[in-house]
Structures are given as structure tokens and as C-alpha cells.
Image 1 (cartoon, helix red, strand yellow):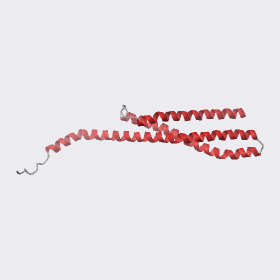
Image 2: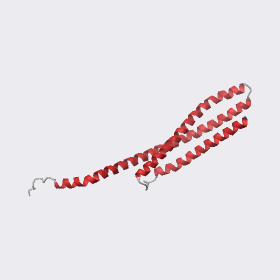
Image 3: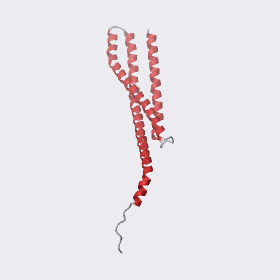
Image 4: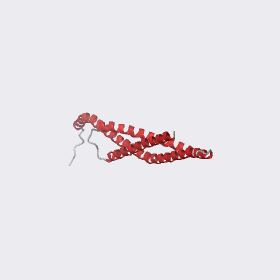
Length: 168
């Protein structure tokens, strides 16, 4: 039973560590992209890609936030459970609970470090999405005006009223 508990704790730590490392790695990959010069790909394709990235990072941020909340709730309960185990004379159970509390506190620290980074990445991606949307909107507006704009411009030149003749 103790061996199973330790195995579950190790497996949980390994999975959590992988998710943290993976999140940091992806965050490191996205931040430089957000600071780069405009992309060579068409704006509509980049917009689609950025929206997919945003969805991914928002999901990760939500998962980290939920995990943080759950761990904080667990960490609040464990000290009283450890104390209760000690009073009942179950030192081995208290030790397992103390190890679990230590693991949870480390997870909380990691999540508290990771969450602001993920939020920054999401903000950067949202900013780039807004830029791309404005760029596409300007292009669409220019294309519409471009087809009519030349005709309007020529008509204005032809219909320009002549002012009074200048006298010398």
C-alpha cells in the first residue's frame, strides 16, 4: 500500500514536471515569435495560426490555474491531517502526509511561477492578433476604396468648378 502510494506520487510528480517543462518550452518558443518582425506568411494564415496558439496557451493557463487552486486547498488541509495522525500515533502516515504536503507546496511554487508567464504569452498573442485584424481590415478597406477610389478621383478632377478669373 505504501509502495503504491509512493508510485502514484512519483507518477504524479513526473507528469506535473513534464507539463511544466513543456509549458516553459512552448512559452519560450512563442515569446520570441511575438517580438519578431512581421511574418512572411499571409496575414490571414498567420491570424488563424495565432488564434490556435492562443487557444492552446489559454487552455494551459486554465489548467495550471485550476491545479494551483486544488493544490492550495489540499495544502490548507494537510497540516491538520498530519497533526491528527501524529496524535493517533500513526507516525508513518504522518510522514507520508508530510511528504505529500512538501510535494504540493513545490507544485504550488512551480504553478505560481508558470502562470504569469503563460498569461504574458496569451497577452502577447492577443496583441499580435489585434494587429493582424487591423492590418486585414485596412487591406480590405483599401481594396474596396481602390476599385471605386480611382473613378471618384477622376470624376472630382473633371467636375472641379473653376473659380473667378484672376486679375492682374
